[in-house]
Picture 1: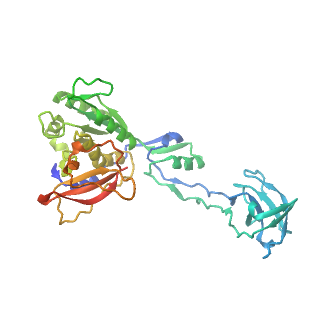
Picture 2: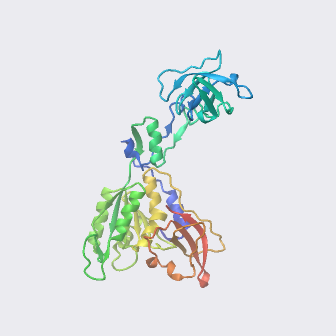
Picture 3: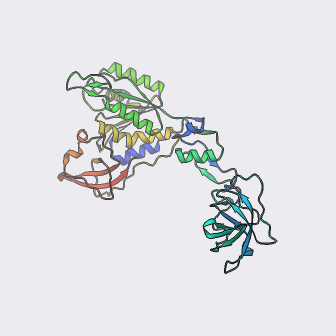
Length: 400
């Protein structure tokens, strides 16, 4: 077990873990939204399968064009979108076929003259402008070609993907199984939502519901267990239950070194299953990572901001990998001369291209003073540098 390691070491350890997807499921198209694709999606035919009109106009052949555009074309008929009959443009004299948006371009036609660029009198068409060959035509295979990979395995499917899959006539989609995530929160002071506070010492189960939302946001299936009171027996029993029911366990609270920090005590007893305990970051320095019974376990600190930051930096990656997805972690390039003993992850919202934060205010660096519920979407990463507490931004990363 590694103890009190720096952030770079923690990242190396996480990346070295052998974690694969839990399985593959076949679900109905709508149910694939937000799921991780388990198989590459490959085009089975060209799209479009033949040249199509990009706008309403008249299909003609370029061999009848004259430089002064005075040539007249005889209109043969109409070619609407979805026309079941093949439309053929004769070439023995200048003919035109009115062709609507999305309709197949008639055989032998290579120019589409938009209705805004022509003059029609009775059944005669005269060009006001000379279009270029193929200018308003979507050629065969312009969207994609047969055999082309359209969506890669490991992509999280959004609404645009669902539309593409529908265009491919995909009724069912193969996706990776979603990880079940057990969420444990402990503390005698905690109340569940809807309960009445008895005194000012009580607080509501913020972290539990925060983690439920984070797990859902990242594609997992959360299970929030009842609030654990500060007794070792109850905490240990619930940890074992969660390990039997879930693929990943997130514990919030009890991770420090106090008399009632029983998660920390369990980690000490199962030291041979621990991967690391303590990372030199703030907030969240008391985070623990273990393989309990072959299951992924994170002991997250109890302050809400610490819980949120450590989930984003560590647990989120493991959840994505269990779900079969590709995860791009927060990476740092830190000059060796700085040699920071402790990295501070500050969260804030970028509203415009200009943003500031007063890094000289030390209260920002205390997890209890950092409000985790503002709509912040950036990390500033700072070092506590030497004895003068100089704050220097080392990196900035989006985490939404």
